[in-house]
Length: 255
Image (tube, rainbow, N blue to C red; front, side):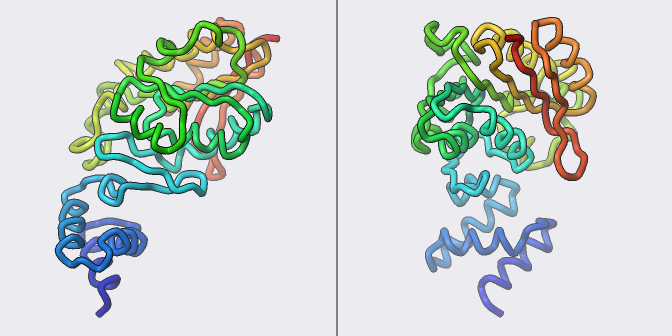
């Protein structure tokens, strides 16, 4: 039996659905060192995020560095990111809130290399990681670290911010609960606390005609649609993926 088969079997027996792919990544990172490989396997079997063990993940087709302790970008955020990239002009201005590893900001830059993209995050580890991925990242809460010169000038604002209702936090996967910070997920009693702050701040920083994108879940889109209209947004669109699952919300500031 090859190393790939044996590692894959161990991961599969522990319930990991993408065992073959994960085994391949672990083997590549260990560089043929059996002691190092065993250490990485044990970390994964304990539930530690694979991206922390390998040091990277793939997002929108790009290899993104992910340092230990930094939020791991999810594939579910890719459709929202790609839509935001289409809205961003070639020489436009974009802000990625709660940037984490900078995966979304890096994708926007890859699609529109001449654009000015800034990421913000309250976690200094995340800011450092995002910078290592080539992102201009600032440390601070949401819009706080942004220059006032950007008010009314931003074309696209995107945020995968905490939106899990506090009472639903125990339902998150084991590795999420045990390893990742609840600050990355807990959005308050209805999961709307941070989302509403994003929408309010977006109206201040977006240019007329600029768009805001947020990832949402459950019935949050219905509630936030009303908030967007009240704040002066139009062309509000609820976004679904190819499987029909809710992925986000887009609103355009009234021109």
